[in-house]
Amino acid sequence: MTFLVYTRSHGTPELSGIDASLAIDSSKRMIRPGFLSSAERRELEVCVRSQREDHGIARRANAILLLDDGENCMQIAKFLYLDDDTIRGWHKTYREGGWDALSTDGWKGGQSRMTLTQEAELCAWLDERFCRSTVEIRAHIAGQYGVDYSHSGCIKLLSRLGYEYRKPKGLPRVAPEEKQAEFIALYERLLNELGADEAVYFADAVHPEYQTKPAYGWVKAGSNPAVTTTAGRGRVNIHGALNLESFDAPFVEPTTVDGVSAAQLLAKIEARNPLSRIIYVIETVPNFVRDASSYAIGKRSSNMMAS
Image (tube, rainbow, N blue to C red):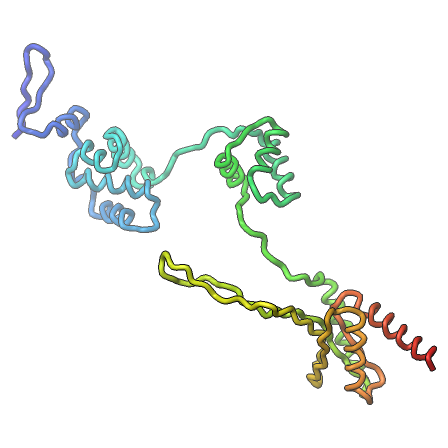
């Protein structure tokens, strides 16, 4: 049993027979244990044990559970590196609004140093370029609006405005969808009208490289593994074509891919189709037709002059 003892000199009550920390709690209304129902405890325990829960919210649930177990505010505050008034505030919020009120973070950030108009202008400026560093952005903000941001402050500003730091996605160099649809229609019409003495080839050039490239892997810490690279092996140029009907695939291996290699490839295709009256060659190399035609015309003219 606890007795209240009043001293005549000061007139303030003293508690005897209890811990000093409990005396401090008692001076600010002792929080009695066992105030949680079974359902409330289960709800809080799920929050504490959840690995996905926010750390700050889980600490609040932990504090309420410890209060329900009979721990005093000063002890809980000591374990959680907080002050005891914070624990009492959490208890008051929980008793008044339940877990929904306690788990809501009512913190609000400060006023932005830029106006809404300035932020909109900054967003338009960012959308027109690709900035690799905050240095350029901070310099623009300082020069344009007279506001100096630190590196971390600029990152927070950009994040709030909906920007993130990442690599752009690499897209293959392909024609627009309209052009692709136009070509598909042209190709299908060509196949439907193709004669028995006609052929269609797709031609392109590739440049494979034979070289060793190191890759990531698990090695012993402190070790310095090495891999021998290939020396003296140049790039290979292959200029070829493919007939999707017969799977005929003629190719040449030129030193460089140009009008000369194009004419050599055309000559090879022609030699493989002696009975074809017309051979359609669809080529993706830029200026292929112009270079090949000019080379072939020049070669034919020189032969005619020689004869």
